[in-house]
Length: 344
Ligand code: KG4
Ligand code: ZN
Image (cartoon, rainbow, N blue to C red):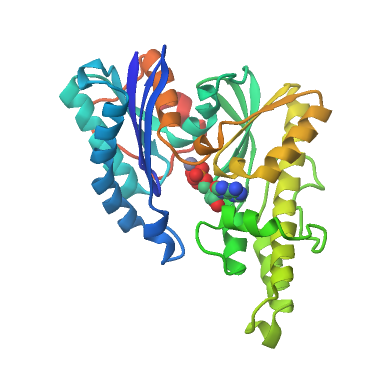
């Protein structure tokens, strides 16, 4: 079976073609980072308009790369939520229409299920059951993944997501959007032990996270060390040290909770998914912590950690094979709790 998939939930337009025998045949992506950078973050209306411009050319290129004609496509998957509603609707309208025109099923995919199943694209996919640490710009969750399609949330953030903590701290340090990778780069030159930023919720049992206090701590550190009561520039070494210390606080919290989740479930496999999973130091820390526990950690390759359509194709394939598809309506959901997935 062969599936075409679209992703347009935020600031990446992407199209992929995936075959359950031959694997990933094509994946095309256009990042809107340059479009939004001057505004310091994603502008939803601009994102939607750009998806409209980009999706069809990406689709044509993907079909050509995969040497696939529309009559060989058995289903069309698209991200139906959660995300920016206008952006989601561009992919949902296109996906639903293509499925109608090609007379094949349309499959609405949950963006987070895409992230969770992205490691299935790798040569050595993770076994089930496993614990997934899902860390993106909007979500931070530990999930018990019994098998594809069967998820139960073990713990999640009460406020900001880990990616948001990276992005907000980066902004306070004057780094351009998107902040996470920029902060990680600045941290290369910094000392992680100079600032003792909070590691919230570690002192109590449970698998919940809270990252909102971190940005206040970073804001205070920046203000206290800036000349002229917060008006002057921050010296370069201090900036790098703050970046390294905040990155270390986030990583420490994620790693310790992930270890606890492995302990609590008794599983020996951890999967890391979502954009923050691209962070090199997080990967290194998890690899060593998890190995010490006698478990293994699996990641999607870096390009499939951040938003892409290949992961939507994999999740769509699981649903297509299970006979799940949509009626003729074009639907998208800005909010869509993962817990609703089994019944949706
Ligand atoms: O999964 P994703 O591409 O989009 C969402 O669905 O949210 O994740 C984006 C998030 C952003 O907060 C970005 O700053 C963060 O992932 N991110 C990183 C790195 N690469 C992306 N955070 C830390 N280190 C990185 N290398
Ligand atoms: Zn995402």
